[in-house]
Length: 471
Image (cartoon, rainbow, N blue to C red; front, side, top):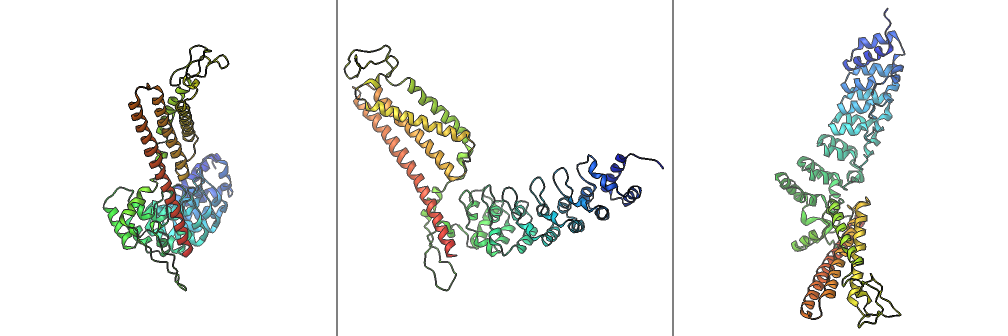
């Protein structure tokens, strides 16, 4: 009998796993009853069970499990178990055999933090999903890294039949049905509407718990129906809009923008009918809402602008308006505080040596404030902090507003300092123009809008808490 190297036997075993050849498997077993225990010594990225389970060779897989049940616990190069591969390919009989050998594998993660149920849901393997849920009901609660549920995966990959099966198993778990992902805070209804899956939206609105949670807000502050308005408009958009309106979820019925009455009927659990806001009020509230993460998108541009402003405001600190003394001045000059007891040193500011110069000190204050605020903007831009949340946007917006306003006021003060006294009319013109533009337009209007936005958000949160409490 010819003696063959063990490496050749392993290659033959892996080839047999790809073809499902039981004759080769039986011959290798007769030659060495413990040949499967040498699999761990080879350099392949996966076991023969991974190969046969993914291709669908049932008898070959059953024989491998019979000879060595521990193969069901082996992982491949990507951290996947044989059950992951069989579930993704929809081999229901092999899935049953693998669950019998290792039932716990239905909750094992691969390197992408996905369990077998996730792969079966993504590929629409309805029967496999049913088998996995029956074997391990808690697997439906396993989340991905982005806090996405298996329901989110069904909608992302447009697997409606799989979604229906999963909803049947978790129909009594409202928190899970209306769970939000971590990145954008979208529920499954948000996702179905934004992906314009008409049949999925129709089905979700027939699920009572999903419909009750239809007023949930994502991170952008939109309900499911509102998110439709911020996507490109097409025929599907109008169709979904009509579906939402027929279900009572149109723009005019959103509870987040309503003023619900606080009257409660004793002995009943019905919510009070909301008072619909007028069309003008809805447009105003829509305008005041934070529009996504626009600051995050222009982070690089903001850093460039802040750097330019920093350079602009740094220059007057070393070269102030009016110049500097070229030599030490010890003589008493009219309007200046120079003298033998108070020498005006060379290189110091001329305007700063005046006995009384309000606009110079005001200029230096505004210039320093603009310089500091622009440094703060640069720090936020390069620090890596997330600016997608409202607090980050609020801090950065206030810093930008302070930078530009202070820069405008510093310019107004500098103009007043360098204009000759005989130009009193021009001086007043500059002063009035810059004061009106800086103080009224920038400070009052911009700050007022942000204050109203903050109050609007606060009122919305309070109303949401009141509605939840009534429920």
